[in-house]
Image (cartoon, rainbow, N blue to C red; front, top):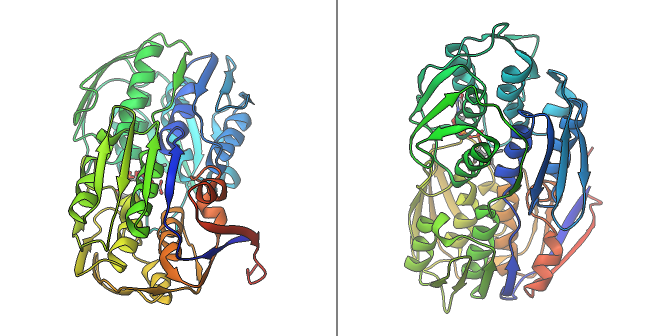
Length: 424
Ligand code: EPU
């Protein structure tokens, strides 16, 4: 167990080169299962979750070769195993994304239920119902999703109750090998889903409506493995952009897509930051104290839930009162108790939080309970007076490559050290 020791007070200034998106690469790795052969991914971030997904693919029979510089080669054999055990799945919720590809390729799949986590209960109803509509016999048995489609999956029209990222991905992946046309209506349209659809298209899938809320997939495709560059991580870029605003600094994000962060950059501009954007980079600069802004999290292109904690940290030092509404995950305000330990004035009521900005926060030991909560606490620690210790840094390692190196490169006083207070 390790923690971060942060000496607050330095502005974040400088440049960060952003790697590929965690929430895309994990699904691209699952997509590789759809075709026998060699998939090569570029710009793969060096993060824990990629290692966990790699372990899972190896258990399914694939060979993985990380070649440095963000290149990852995945060799998928002709026959793959169809079972993903709890010991692997529980480490990584995204592993549920193998369900669709396994069912489509092996005509059966047995994937452990990932369970809830610290951001709240996370249902799978839409994954299950959609695959059943495509002809799978599917149910939950002894903690596993068990599915069979002895004659393969078939196309159908699926109307999602909610634009779920994971359900859209699972159904999209399965549909590429299903017979006939699958329509996914009310589909999620996050840039990571566009990235997956683009890789699938290069593999030979016929997908219409990419980037819209209606995806039309014509199957079955004769899929070939391909090479693909992962879309830049908008959550990493967004975290350091908000970090510039929180600390009154100036950060340039390279290999970053401002157009994937429209609402976020608009909010930062309203908070008083200046934003300059080019085609593959942008700079956020904040002079003076930020102004309070309200945010409401929504599916893309709305404000991303994954940047909510960082905006609460910004609100905690802004001038005025901010209101934040969380619509995606019921447990995503749990971290505010920790933020309060740094002196933040935050009150929550259900899925609303009211934050009265303070001029100063004060350093204290706090605990990160998930990756984004950890990032919010980290940004708050950077402006807190004195020393902040952030425990649970392994949560941040799940999605932030070279965390301490990046922070030190931006001028933060941060060290990583053994956590002598860690329990268990
Ligand atoms: N939901 C259901 N039933 C379903 C599917 C979803 O009730 O069948 C509910 C979930 O319980 C949740 C909401 O719908 O309350 C949103 O879930 P969604 O399926 O959209 O999210 P996800 O696929 O589980 C991905 C990202 C999350 C990100 C969300 C929303 C990955 C690996 N995870 O999760 O990222 O917050 O989309 O954008 O792609 C993170 O990176 O920190 C993270 C949690």
